[in-house]
Image (cartoon, rainbow, N blue to C red; front, top):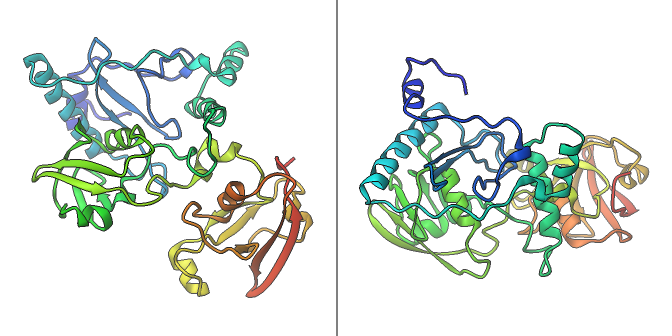
Length: 342
């Protein structure tokens, strides 16, 4: 991140020993654990590899939603405060994570052996394969990682994401109000949006309740059903999940759904491309078509778009009927799903 040396962020950076990682080939992802489907990641840690805080996260709205110069500056300021507290013995960061090198994943090792640069998304691909291989893998529960706090009713400020901009749903029911600052999640100190996501990510899957400590005291939040669900289409695990839906697409916005008279919860999806002659294209679908139902289903709490719905509920070889809109008219396409698009 390039910033003027005499600016606020530049001066903060001068107080750190900085290391820029441009190749993931030799990175210990056990220590530097993060959501690798993001565009930027920053860690503040001490010489014992104890991480004070993480920065760099995203939500379904976009890859840079929670990235801003002010939020980086606040994170670095808090990192310095946590370090002083650690030196004074008033703060105990979690122990360093168990070592796990990125080349543990076969796809990363292959890239290294080909003398190519390893990118973050390739680590995410390796993690996806690892999740699929779990003995207790469940297509309806296992794929979701690094949940969005918004599913708990916490709309957080972009420039200082521990501040609650708007409290709704489960958060509001617990008593959390607008303007409160989240200090701990499940007893873990948090300083950034990434910190909050990290703690949520590691919660046991069977947890029903969560304690958030704000500057107004502790609050117990009842975890809603499907609170971990995010758009799998933006993740490596979603791309690798079979079967291929028959088309590539983008979910409609709430405004677009309203214009078409579709319910807000609809998984309506606009087909954006057919790189090859996929089953969907062979059945008559074209770019711009809007998928509104699959075998009569038009929504699902697990899917924000039709592509994910198909991946979660069908297998290669299944026949489906897709209902879609084209130029205001409703059409249908019936085809057999393939594991891969080609």
